[in-house]
Image (cartoon, rainbow, N blue to C red; front, side, top):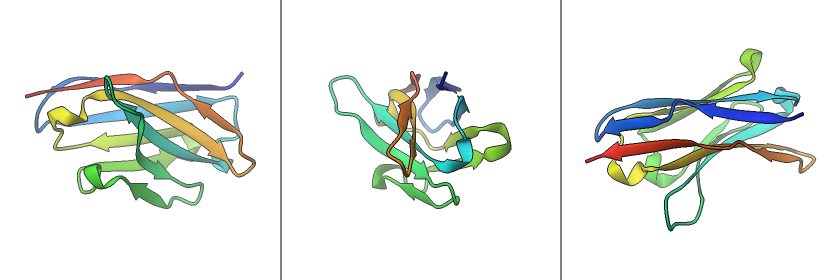
Length: 116
């Protein structure tokens, strides 16, 4: 059974930091690129950051310089370090795994709320 379980969300004041984690089980983690998406109420889901199997990273313009994505293959975990948080970062953050064989899985998401 494949599971992606996110944690680390919560309520934080503007300017604060949070570190999200996504632990994968039931997959060979090292062959999956990992992405973080977010969805705010009334808005479409959007890509936040991603990290490939080789460790290459990419970021949405709206988080560049503030968020950092990383992975620990020994722990089957991908992280999203979020600094200098803004109220507009408030959303449900979900991790997404995809292999080169087009097999993909979603986590259930974790709520991040940034107060002004």
